[in-house]
Image (cartoon, rainbow, N blue to C red; front, side, top):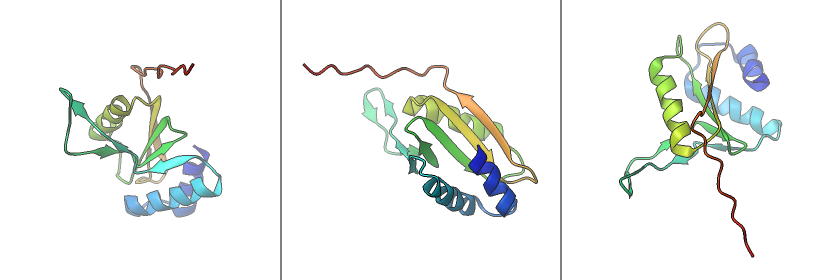
Length: 123
């Protein structure tokens, strides 16, 4: 959260999403936050991997999906996107950071259907 506020304070609004994504990655690296950029998610339908992959802008700590937007407001389409990604990836939490307005707009989306991975016991 703090990094997103810092980024908005320093860059303001008006840039394209890719600028905010690149700058956010710099802040993640500087602060030694574990993340993957453009974390791909495979969708399996009736046992078949679908041809098209989906991806978070960032997956932090292997459990928090982050979407960066630069629009006047967070839309239902963006909300549906992050919720679907959470279910597909079985991640705990999603967040949208929207840099498209004068003040940072953000929303959290807990995955109510999160399933803890079954631990593997190795004899």
